[in-house]
Length: 203
Image (tube, rainbow, N blue to C red; front, side):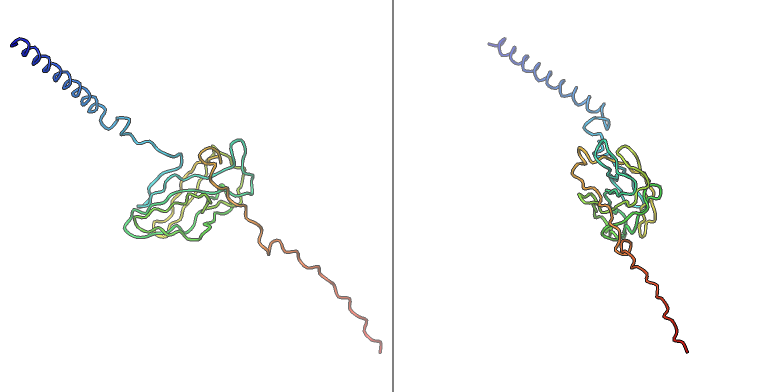
């Protein structure tokens, strides 16, 4: 009985020792991985441009083109999508934007975009809130566009953003509407009539 009890005790101690070694091995492996462990690594969730400018974070900025295999023609419009977060100490606003090398003009469809402190503003659609009008050349996925964002207080920031095709993940985003000519531009001028002078009465 004494030997049997001693044998069980030894076996129990061996199991506890093996378990402790296994836990120690796992802990050591975790320490060796440190901040490089795959579960701790940052995986960017989007292909858009990310940057921070004077406390304002610009995230996932991209221009939406036509579906894969096609392109937006010159003269048409394209939407710019992005997220904004003002991490500064005072409110700001996006007052305008431009893309001189890519478009004739850039329009903020709702006017000036307010950026309160510590409040995210998602210009992510599905309808674009920032529209590049009058594309200077055909635009398709895989290209890039240089855009300048003008903030009321932070100033101007120029970034290069990718052009994504309206396919796969971006298939649900809406294409930018092509601006219609203004009434003044399409109004047909009235025909000019020349008045024929009547002969003066003879004296």
